[in-house]
Image (tube, rainbow, N blue to C red; front, side, top):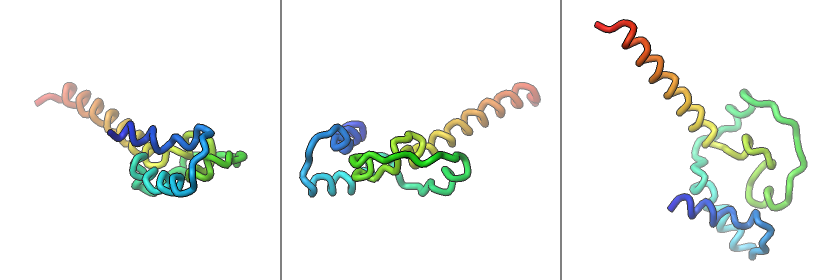
Length: 102
């Protein structure tokens, strides 16, 4: 269901004309469909240094800062980094468990 919601919410980016009330509704539910619940501006500013690019009007109307995917990932970037760290942690624990078995 979430995948369908993400597709429906991003339809205005396909150069299709929508009424203003529909775009407002899409902007309202885009945070829910993209799981953007953690503020990531601080993390993104510390990890990455991007140059400013021209912004497309449709991207800016949907709340995207730029066409750069890293900047638009939002909380998904944090989730991805946490998953990678968890995988590394699990492999390290397995390695030390096998090495120092009681």
